Length: 256
Ligand SMILES: Nc1ncnc2c1ncn2[C@@H]1O[C@H](COP(=O)(O)OP(=O)(O)O)[C@@H](O)[C@H]1O
Ligand SMILES: [Mg+2]
Image (cartoon, rainbow, N blue to C red; front, side):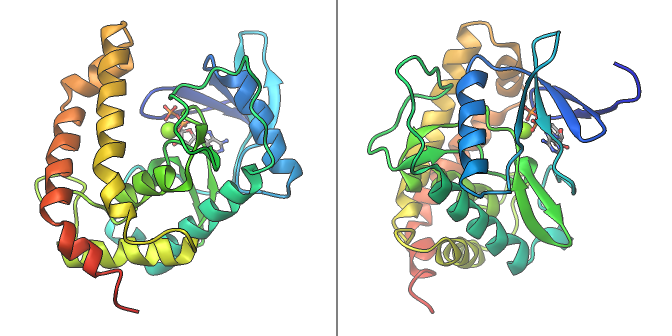
């Protein structure tokens, strides 16, 4: 492919040519493309539109204009960026409610009960497109799967508050400040999001650790590398941190 721009995510090398991105297709790609088409038809504009597959078997998607930031650098820690991510997630979830998975669909993650929506599965700054200080899109739907709203919210809040222990290189803020950002995210998302999301975070992170270990044991090199780089260790520390600071984090939801 000539004249392309190359991006590296946590797992994939993605190539953009003009308005189209070519990205290695996951086994779930056919189901994910139906999902992306469904949310587009439902009027949601914050996700790439599926454009089929190229001759090399890569998936083709529309390019979402804006910037994707790997981490929340100080200038990105604004209430506007935070709450626009939350509203966008609300709109995405709402746009998925009419989506009907088919029996043959292969999702990367296990279906989580109760099924309320299609979860994106990896809502984080590194999968969000920002324009003029606002979150305008989500990319990388590889981890999408049916599940409850709070399951997706727990991970989003973990990444955006962020609910990281002070030793985590991406951590910022006191537990109280993190609680306030988590609460602001949930308020912008709207009901049923609330303080209970805090109690889902450890389970959500543990499910991710278990999944990464399972995939690494089956030979997945990206996850083997993530584990070697200490990602699972960070999640374990953050699980303990969220449990230890549960009351402070939850109290932040009580202040209007
Ligand atoms: N549809 C898209 N629109 C805009 N940028 C994209 C799109 N898909 C991928 N990118 C760019 O490619 C990078 C890696 O993409 P991503 O799909 O998140 O890879 P990975 O699966 O490795 O996480 C992103 O950080 C972003 O810069
Ligand atoms: Mg990604």
